View (spheres, rainbow, N blue to C red):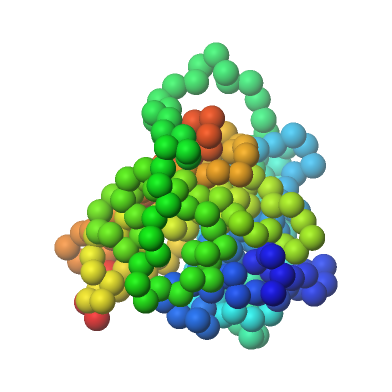
Length: 258
């Protein structure tokens, strides 16, 4: 198996490896790798002018099988100051995910920076968490995790650092955005407040807002989950690199008793 989430089969075709396998089913991917692959596709249709990603949303249309994938991207709304791009992922003849990204022309606002959350303790201050019993280890083992507070399989808020042990696409160094998206989808699983044996809490989407481009390999995830009274929850995360906070993530949740 390649040391990557995906092996390229063509310009926009990829084969998922066992590193993408999610914790719940050996036949379905964790959404971290598909989110990273969609980020790669959106980066390829980014504006030619100097711009930064302000928001990326991944809409999950169904389970993503561990299978061959086809991607395409397009410019939905061109512009000099802002641009909206879209991407679609198809598996087994059906769309399994779509993504949207807003790009904003870069400017210098260093003098008016405000409202940033506090930085996390560095990765080296964390400890390696134990893998929860019964979870598949494809994606979990393809990532290196260090826990500052909480961990997967333990109810409550969690603060974790994560980085890819493998490439996103075989033969390519992953970009910082790909690294961030590979981690950001884990906010729900890290901060779950319900017993997985009794409850389903499945995210229907992932939205990431960035105020700074992340750097380096490590991505910090400071996550918590809120559950409402009508079967809907929200997992929120502050996202970091080793220099400080870079953005926020959110996931709408379907919450159901098994």
